[in-house]
Image 1 (spheres, one colour):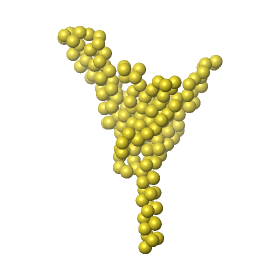
Image 2: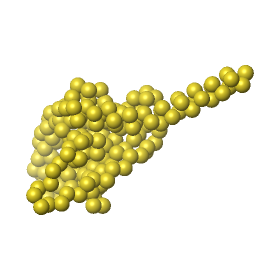
Image 3: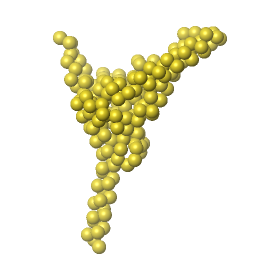
Length: 179
């Protein structure tokens, strides 16, 4: 009886530990796929519809804020311009959020290896990004990058099942998002 209880406790601890470590393993798999430039290995780790909506939402908000700031609120052409920009923005994001596009975006971010492999120009010093990873809830895991105290954006992974994680959002840097 004691052996069965001990085995069940060990199994439960192993289950909890593997569920906790699963986003770290997903990040490792993504980083390996990017380093190998294997978009087919990266694609299963990306929730493309959620990622498109995340990027579209951020860019649309930025565009709306800048159109509001640039024109008077009673300008009849402002709404038409915003509608045109939103349509073009949607098509641009749809084209950008492809396996190849995501590999390029992520390789410049917290998971990617390009930041580690960049060689600084002759005589110029390059700051190394500081990365932090943390759970933001049971089903959300965030990788943040900072350089010199400035936030450089975040990757957000969502849980899909107990052990599977997918990139579902890229939080754009304040400079890109217009904040």
